[in-house]
Amino acid sequence: MLSFSHFLTEQSRKTLDIMMANYGYGRPAVGAEGHITYTNKEDGNDQMLMDLPGEEWHHMVKGKVTQKGSLKDGSLEKYLS
Figure: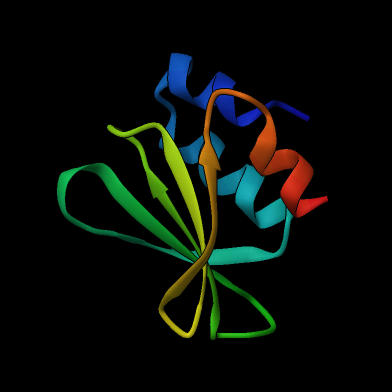
């Protein structure tokens, strides 16, 4: 499986969508300024926000951030595993 840091170098939105789907997140919603929100397929209150320009990820429950990290250091893969 590719890492999230690979997405940043390849700039492939489709690749990011596939990787998030592998962790159970879908329905990507594109927001302002390179932000993409993925919603857990089994729990609509569980979301992952990808801040692509800021190179950060944010885990949210009911819209509140519960954890965040860098898209470059592998922390997202560890968090989702």
